[in-house]
Image 1 (tube, rainbow, N blue to C red):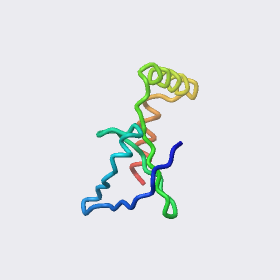
Image 2 (cartoon, rainbow, N blue to C red):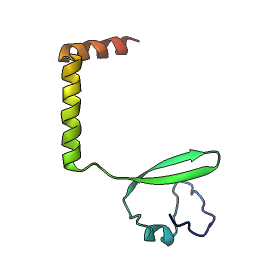
Image 3 (spheres, rainbow, N blue to C red):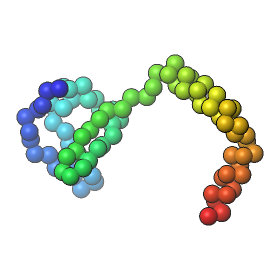
Length: 87
């Protein structure tokens, strides 16, 4: 990891943050999505990427197996939703 020269940035009225061009040279592009982690004055931007299609299908298969193993049915899901909405 290479640290850039510390520079002051500010958040604008509409909560926009203008990043320096050096940030884009690190591989960040217009339209990229990222999460912001902040704690006690430290802010970290972490880019996020959608999973590959094969990873997505693997996750769906694992989820369906787990649901089947747990014995979850459409009726049990509907009942759980009704129960939660009553509260």
